[in-house]
Image 1 (cartoon, rainbow, N blue to C red):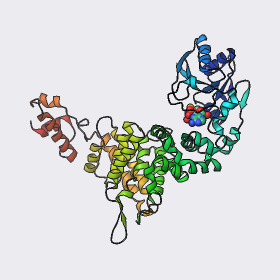
Image 2 (cartoon, rainbow, N blue to C red):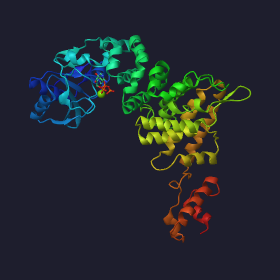
Image 3 (cartoon, helix red, strand yellow):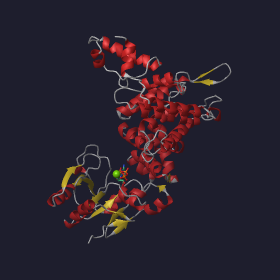
Length: 471
Ligand code: ATP
Ligand code: MG
C-alpha cells in the first residue's frame, strides 16, 4: 500500500526532498523546508525546487548526507550552502545563517551561523519568503507571510529601509516578486524603494541584469515602470531622461517614459495570444521585452522642434539601438538576446508595407547565424503593434496593416520563398553539377539568384534558378 506523502496545502513534498530532510534529522540536525517552495505550495502551486535549511554546519550537513549515500555538490557562492542530488533532483541545503545572502565568493565556512530557524527566517527578504515548514512540526510563520499571501502583498521582513541598506538587490527582488505573483508592494516597503533607489548603484550590474530579466519575463514590466519609477531609473539611468519628456506631437498622448511602459505592457499581453502560434503559457520572449523597454531610449537625445512647434525624433531608432546595446552589455544580458533586441529596435519605426519585396528585404536582414527569422519577424510585428497602441488613437488603425504584414510573412515562409542564401533552393554544388567552375564566382551566382527570386523574377526552385542563371 502506498504511504501518504507529506503535503502542504495539497502540494506533495517530493520523496527525494523528504529523504534529505529525514536523513539530516536522523543525524540530529533540525531541518525545515523554506522559501519559495513553501510560498508556492501555500498558493497551491507545485513544482518549485525545494530549499532546506538546517541547524548543522555545512560540513555536518554534508557528512550526514554522504553517510546516507546522497550525492553532494557545493553550490557555490550564491547561498554558501550545499546541494544534495538525489536521482537528478537538486535540493539546496543551507545552514541557519545570520548574515547576507550573497557571499560573493566567500567560503561558506566564513558565514556567521544562527542558532535557530527563527533567526534564519528573520534575515530573509519578504514575509511571503520567510516561512518554514516541516511535515510534522507544520508551518512556522513568524511574520504573517500567510496573511500577506492572502492579501497579495509583498512586505519586507522588519524595517524596509534597513533591509534595503543591508542588501539593495532586495529592492529589485521585491518588484520581481510583485510582478510575477501580481501582488502589490506594501506602502512602507514601496516608499523605501523610492528613497533607497540610489543604493542600487552599489550592486553588481550583472545581478541587476538578472533581476531585470526576471521582471521583464513576467510580462508586467510596464507596471514596474509606472509604479516604481525611481527604482527602475536607478537600474537603467538612461530611462530617467525619458520621464516627463513631452513629445510635443499629436501622435503621442504620453511622455516618452509612459509610452515605453505602455508598449511594454501591450507587448507582454500580445505574447499571451501567440498570434504566430506557440504556447501561451510560455513566458514572453526576452528579446521582445528588452526591445520594448529600450526601443525609445534614444528619443531625448534626438529631439528637435520644427517651426510649427512640433517635436521630432529623427534617427531615434539608431541611437536607441546603440544605447540599448551598451545598456544590455553592461547588465550582462545574453548575447543572443542583445542581437535580436537590437534588430527589433533598429526596425521598430521603419515604415513597412504588406508588400512582398519589402517584407523579404526585412526578412533578409532578420536572418543569419543563429537567428530564428520567423520568430523574430513575429516579434517585430508585436513590437510595432504595441508601439502603435502606445501612441495616440490616431495611430491605432496601423494595427490592421501590421496584421496584413504578419499574415503575408507567414505565407512567404509557408511558400518557401527565399530571403537568404540558406533559404535559397540552390547550393554551390548544384552550380558545379550544372557546369559552373568552382571558385568565388559561385557565391556571386548564388547572390544573383537570390536577388532575382526576391525580386520575383524567378521562383525559388532549383531548376528554375539554374535555368535563370543560364550557366
Ligand atoms: P524563485 O521562485 O524566484 O526561485 P525563491 O523564493 O526560491 O523564488 P530564491 O532567490 O531562490 O527565491 O531564494 C530562496 C529564498 O532565499 C527566498 O525565498 C528568500 O527567503 C531567501 N533570499 C534569497 N535572496 C535573498 C536576499 N537577497 N535577501 C534575503 N533573503 C533572500
Ligand atoms: Mg529559488
